[in-house]
Image (cartoon, rainbow, N blue to C red; front, top):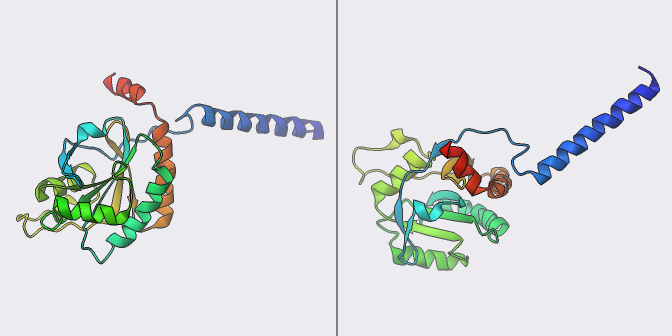
Length: 213
């Protein structure tokens, strides 16, 4: 190929790449292949730090991160929630984004206890919500819906069972778990933030229509 031919080839290659880049910015989801969800979130009803019910219906059209912790934890929980604060600060102004922090020790973490903990975090609890409820319901959500703990860990006696996981679930607007992240790794937390921003651009009405067909 002549020098002139190489110049033309290079020019059109750059042109195609620029055109593709513009499309990825103008059309949300253009640059994404359809990734099958990890799982779908089942119906749930828990109680938040203000004593109010929070259900799966409240999450319709929302992108959210689900995690498990307990207020008296001296191990991984403080580091996890320090990392979760990075998520909160990055996305707190997004109207369709939430964080759901479920207790894995509801015997200790009453409404009053998680309210005290939420106050100590100094965050907007309309955006970062702390939840308590029945132990079996909380654990079933972690294992059967969010898939952030192995169902094989489920013991015959719920009283003897204890869930302590560092993994977070990122859920899209239609209630599908799209990704699982390690809440102790800041690199994965930063990836979660980027993926959440992409999921927030997805149009909820189009998602519902697509799933109905």
